[in-house]
Length: 400
Image (tube, rainbow, N blue to C red; front, side):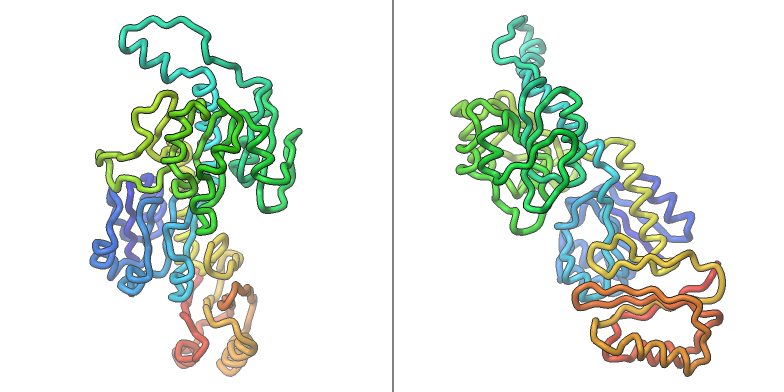
């Protein structure tokens, strides 16, 4: 099995996969669509971060690809539907860097409230500016969290521990943590929050959700933070509101267009503005988070290859069978129509297979069934399944 890891994924991923018997190639940068089309034939597993985009054209060229590991939270850089249609599983790390992102946001709230970026710059310029003007405590301030998922809820807990009042808005029904208050609308949150922090996902419907109208609805001299997705914010509108003084400060870790490689020029309308913190998409880039992400996603790829497990896959039916200790295992991804499971079981029965376990799930137009049997299946039975009109793929696994 050949694995290609891009964007300088943590070495623990390489070690995990090599211990499992994979041949691993690690690159420090992302690849363009044309480069991926040329590089992926012969690659069975692909590991990426947020800067590599997987299109239908790339998937068509990747004829040997069985799974993609997104070594990050988001998966919007992958065409998940196209991958599912081709039977390519996609995994991510939805929880591994949560704490790192939250700690960055907490730090940014304090730095912006104290205007430390300006104090720091003046000291480096040799100017002693010992003044409390524009500097505030965060205790007693109201933090408005837009998107109350894994990151939003942990941010809520830490902010409240620092003495902040927390309000939140989410389109999903979320349980409030601590004394946090749910707001009935985004507009209601913006009218009350001293700090607005975005933590929404990268679904297409979130593109451009924060623009001139939303900035105008914020309290005068409030702070703005985006550590979610670059495409959700109109940065030109933010620049205008920083320039006018309506927004007192901002911190952004994500951008609509980001450089592909280390050292490339970063271009943004937000460069050079006072009390604006710009970081190069490092919310989850702590050594602890990257190591945990590397271990977690590499483990998902390993388990998919060894045992057929699709647990926590974001695009295929999620099936988590127990470890295979004896006999053989059959993984069967198929079109989700009535009668397929009966077809599988009839074929197994005709082969004299003694079924010791069966695990299945469906997701949209796809179904996935894993069947454990006491002995190896015949080549004829496998061939019949492979040629079925409903088959996406058939894979066999044997106990170690």
